[in-house]
Image (cartoon, rainbow, N blue to C red; front, side, top):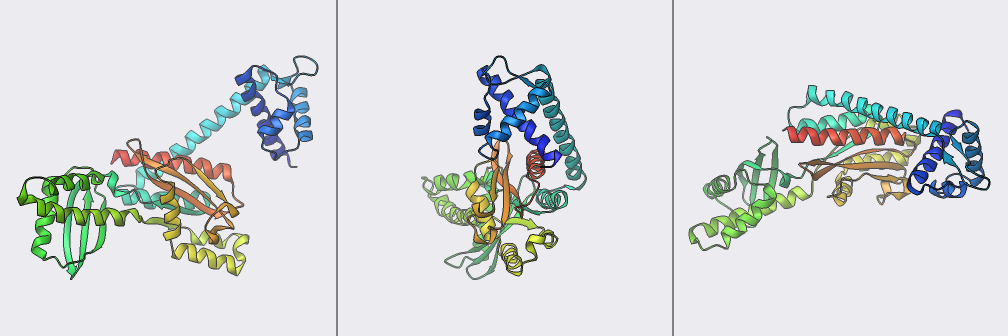
Length: 345
């Protein structure tokens, strides 16, 4: 075992002893530490590490046949490490924040810059899910007839996000009627949360004012179609070239799988959608992935939010042989930064 890995194991053992002792105020046994480490290390190795920690003065045995408790030196070792790690994470976040400050002027910029930073910082593919539009407030809606039974809806939010929807309608609608519907929505629903608009329009469609019931019903059908299409949300995915540098992906069949993943993004998008509204971090390693084409990869995702509500997910796609601690740190920082920038907008 190399020295760096051994030092990491020693710190893990010390951390388990400290956490357990802080909680129980009772000496901690090697058996307990072995169980806490999930079987990834033998009980004999744990005993050897604990003997080294005791010899170095980080833990001590209060009396014969008892477990170990931390010493002042042990607490100091732990506190210094945690403090340095937190400071390093803060410096990382501040450095990444400058990338957003210099380059970001719209929500689209946030999405694209985040995916770029994942690729640049981690040398893996970056995945960013577009925020669901239902979480934003309506600024303007334009409805344009392209051809019979096909309408282009251009939705603009108060944060200046612009989203286009191709709506397939059952019956042809005249251009003049589309204009009336868009005017009605813009007049009655401006500044409303987009997710709340269908309920509002439904109330108008079922109300007593006969002159607006029909207009509200038509508007409701079109808004429902936009929200339904938005649920099948796009993702921004870049970094296919990162796989070319990895020896694991020299295999032709593996390369084909990656090409399929990047060309057919719906399955990755479905994974991200299935995780909503959770904001927690998920890590899928190799065969833990349900998607067959990702069995040889690791996928790490986490959520980002707006005003305390999770509205999207970001992620990393790479080989199982990745620096998980660094990946997790960068993804966590980027998640916080996205949320901050969205609130600024």
